[in-house]
Image (cartoon, rainbow, N blue to C red; front, side):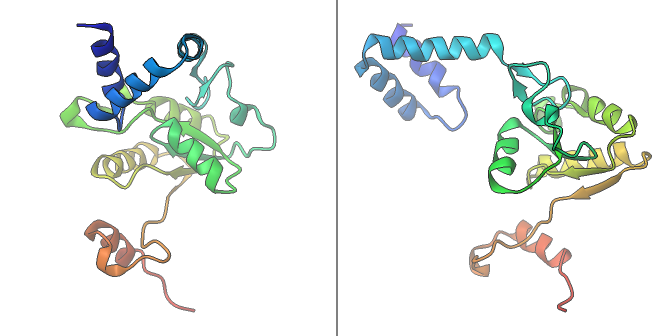
Length: 196
């Protein structure tokens, strides 16, 4: 395999990148000055060498404990459980959430061989058992695997004296009912509220 084909194949392994996009990225890099390509390679190597999961929450960091977990202004009693670090970035950018996080590292998917032992579920249970956590917010994706993961977590935490909540599900503001999928509409009907 040539160097070009090898790079295309590696780009194509990235999520959301198909073969055509991988080719465009590869040929774009070939048009760049060598120092620009070297800078990108150095950044990738640096990330691979320095970044690791936070020892508390699992979010990527260069330190032992990430900035969120070490921030004294954050409430350690409220923990938002997410599937991956990208969700932490979305919640941080989109909300005023002032609690902390727990990154599972994926979701349950028995068909893909991903069981509870492959995720950071045991560390979450240990964290809650420590007694400092008063509420766990389950913020898994609204997919079949995300729902299964959420249900598993509810059962794993049921015996502990901690409130477990789930993100609300329903219709987006400004949405048109004609274009809403059946799962979203079902959740919206189930979680309906009395008009005051």
